[in-house]
Structures are given as structure tokens and as C-alpha cells.
Image (tube, rainbow, N blue to C red; front, side, top):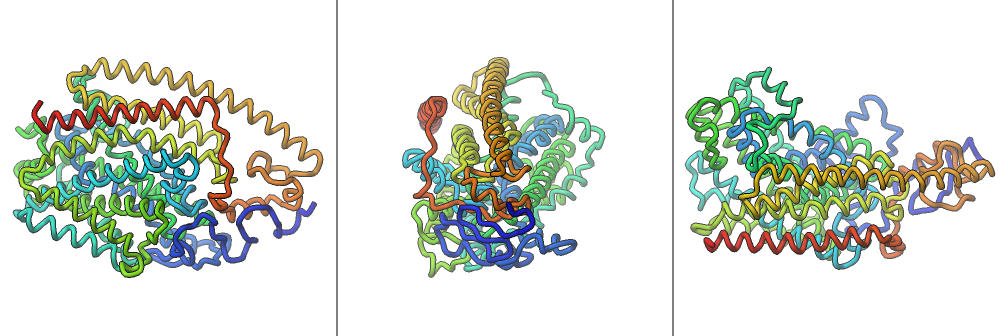
Length: 589
């Protein structure tokens, strides 16, 4: 066995340490390889992470940052601003604790798509098509397209309300915003688009002075951030608002966007560590922003006629102007406009990325419209249709917003379930698959999101449902989840014990390096025998997903069949019920 050399020859699509980094065999668009060109720096394709030390690591982080920051700040879009403002204006600072609880949820979900994007080199929709078949692939892309199209409409509603605060008519504000959004993305330069996004993110920091000018009570802020409480007791409106906060903070489009944006930025496994930091920074910024919006509405409007009388985001801006001054009201309107533009850009891109990935056409911001016409036609069409809906006189914009909320609640479970399954697919992620701890956290989060999704859907469809009924259902669901989790852990522990015994036998025979047991994908023992611990790390950092067409499908267990069948039935029934409810509201019946 060779324990001193860095050279090794494990299987899989990769190269040896120090050479030009590997290209995933799954890569669809040739623009998704070569140098990482970020808003704040460049990393050459052949650079090795270990050579960057000290202050150069900070420069590396600055060059790689972007996908996590954009997706997280974009999460505080028009719907997010409206929901956080409603929470503060209706219940004061008493729901700040919900934002703190969402931090681990956001990180666990988004970290998984970071690994999928960096290792596989393709978008989320493409992986679902390949690993779960045409039905689920088509379903995931079609529902993403419909939901995102409606979400973009809500972003333009936010643009209209923000400009309306300053007296700009809809006929001017909406076309101007649509043109600006297209120009942001169509320059044929990923770096230029990312710099536009950085500028909008910097403007989003206006939430800080807005919150400070609202004269917050810091004792109340600290107390309500860490101590969960239900002001006024359990009630359907309160639970629905809490669920809405979760729904607007964790959305399906985020998964598709960040994975594809990681691919488009050409981030490979060697730079996953930095992209994780990027995501964490983005989460902190977005949660601070959400808390600032909630706090501004809570403290500036406390003890006024506006408190408890939320109507929409524009009305909140006018109330802030009346009770806290024109500067606070103006900052709120600017934040709403900025959030709407960031959200519209990210949501539109998540859709066009997915369509390009599935149809295997060029879908990168590195291409100009002339070289990737289909990508930009999709992008422009989505913007044009969404803007056109807002321009329709007497369009049911409130109904659209309600429908988006309900559909997002319905579709979120499927997105998170497939995310966890993909991150346990050893053929796709190899040594990057979820660990046991990651699966425990991800499983708990998925189940909580499933329960909240069900509650949100039922609350939307049956507005007379009592708060006690919703709470009782959530408690029963939580108990079922605990029992199911224990069963899964016992099964996982049994399988891990078998694997450990097998690897221990191999180690005793000199066929595996001590310290690498259980970490590597299934590989021939003669290959492992030439690896050192350092070689194994290099192996992991260079491992890329082989061609998806060559990968064997995982054996479908009875539990998985039952689970996917239940999910399919739930989605079918829930979507039909939501559509029927929307039609009833639209027709007045």
C-alpha cells in the first residue's frame, strides 16, 4: 500500500490533484465550465483550493459569493415583505421567534442543492427527470413553471405598489420594471448580472435605518426573538400567518434557482466550502431584513389606528408615513421595490434555467441573446406575461396572491422530498451523499414542511377551520413523524452496522485505508488500496457525477413506492381543490 504519495487512481470522472478540475459528464451547456467569474473576482479553472491561504481565502470567498446571497435576499421578495409587515402590524414583535427557527431550515435545504449543483453540474429538474422518470420530471418542471409565473405576477404587484406610493402610475412603472429586469440579465455576462444583483442587495440594506427610525424596544425584540409565544392564544388566523411566514421563507423556486446558479457560476466540489459560507451569510442577511421589516411595522404602528388593520404593503407604507414620518414610509416603499426586483429576477431565472436544462438548450447568463435565443425568449416571455397581467384593468391581483400562497404550500413537500432522496443517491453524489446527521435534520425539516403545507392548504380551502383543529392536527402529525423517524433510524443503524463490519474486514485485509470507512462510494478495493487519507480528500474534491444516462436506477423499495404514491395522490387532490377554490372565489360562489 502506498501511504506517502498524493498520486492515486480511484474510479470516476475526475483528475489527479493539481491538474485542471474535472468536468461533470452530466454537463448540458458548455458555458458551465472554465473559470469562475464572479462580481468580485475570478478563479481560474485549474486553481487548487489548498494553494489559497490567509487573505487569499477571503478573496476566494468574495469571488465565489453570489448564488447563496442572491437566493436568500431574493427570498425577502414582495410576498415576503408583505407577510412580515402583516405579522408586525397585526401581532407586534411577538412573531420574531419564527424567523430564528427558520435559520436551520433554510441552511439545511440550500446546502443540499449546493452539493447537487457543484457535483452533478446540472439543474434540479434535470436530476429529477433522470432519477425519478418522466412523470415526476415533467410534474416538477410544469408546476415550477406555473407557480413561478404566478409568483412573478406578485413581484410586479409589489413593483406597482411601491411606485404607487411615490405617485408613479401603473402604466409607466410596470413596463419600466420589465425592461430593466430584461436588461439586467441579457448583457451576455454573468459578472455583469451578478453586479446588478449586488447593487440591489446593497439597496436592500435600507431596512436597517428604517427599523432604527421606528424606535424599537430592544428588550421586546430580544425576548420575542428567543421565546416562542402565540399572542392571543391559538387561533386560525394566527396559525395561518405563522405558516405563511414559513411558506414565504422556504419556497420551491429557491431550490431550483441556487442549484442552477451554482452550475452557471461554474462552482465545482473544490469550492463547496466557500459556497456554504456564502449561503450562511445570505441567510443571516435575509433574516435580519425580515426582522427589521416586522419590527418597523410593529413598533412604528403600535398604539395607532393602523395597528391590527393590515390591508396591503402599499397601505402599510402610507401608514408608516402618517405615524412615523415620510422618511420611514419612503424607505419601506424603496425596500418593497428593491425586494420585488430581486425576487422577479431570481424567480424568472429559476424557471428559464430549468427549461433550458430539461430541453438541453443553452441556458447561461454567460451567453448573449444572440447565442442563446431560447433562454432569453423564455425569460422575456415570462416577464411580459406577468407584467401584462398586472396591467389588465380590474385584474384579481389579490386572488392571484392567495392562489400563489396555496399552491406553494401544496408543492413544497414534493420539492423537499425529492431533494432529500437525491442527496441520498450515491450514484449521483458519490462521497457527497448525506450523512446520518444530515438525514435526521433533513427528514425532520421535510416532515415539518409537509405538516405546515397541509395546514396552509386546508386553512386556505376551509377558512372556517378552527385554530384548535389545526393545532391538534399538527400535534398528531408531529407524533407520527417522531415514530416514523425512530423507525428509520433503527433501520439505518442496522444497515450502517453491516457496512461497518464489511469495511472493518476489508481494513483488516489491507484493502481499505483506516479513517475512510463508510465515507467513499462503492469502489473496487484494489483502487482503494493505493489511497492515503489525503488522497481520499482529493478524490472527494474531484469527484463528479458520471453521465446520467449511464447511471443505474436505485432499487425502488416498498416504502418508497408507498411514499411516492401517497405524495402523488396528495398533490393531485390538493391541486384540484386549490383550483376549485380559486374558481369559486373568482366567480363569487
